[in-house]
Image (cartoon, rainbow, N blue to C red; front, side):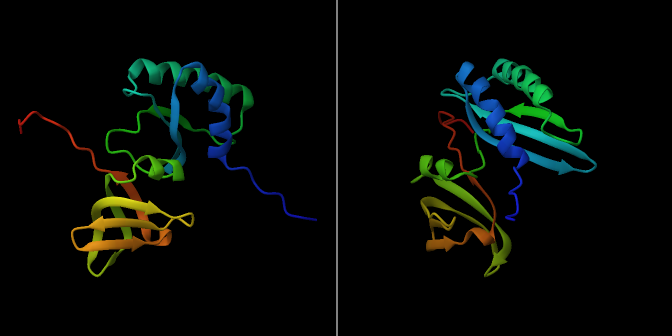
Amino acid sequence: MPKEKKIRTVDVARTLALPVLDALDLVLWDVRFEKEGTGWYLRYFIDKPGGVNIQDCEAFSRAVDKLLDEADPIEQSYTLEVSSPGIERALTRPEHFALYLGQPIHIRLIRPRDGVRDLTGTLIERSEDGKISIETESGLQEVPKAEIAGVKIIAHIDTGGKP
């Protein structure tokens, strides 16, 4: 008899959130279910054109909390958190990388490569197997998914010449 594939908590949380996101004209950037210390956290990162505000986070949180309580898909107790992905947001899904092609990114490696653990440059490509191509000052670097601890965009903030 084939082994049943376990449904991941983040996939259930993502599916439950879809109607709420649609109703509030929001986009789901990411969902994470993480243990920190002795506690578990279900984190939704939401967005919309022009960015989200505290009212967007509150409206989404109230609505999705009701759905999570009704469905009760998570066995252990957890804390629900809702926020913006931030200006220097983490790139985790294929669509994130597609959105930021040609933009400056920062890659943190799991272990240093030639004494370097952080790479900064322009995102050239993310292959289907997760390998990232980045143009750095020292040339094109290709980084396999297995070597990557995290990737985030590098925001350029126009301060109008002010420090």
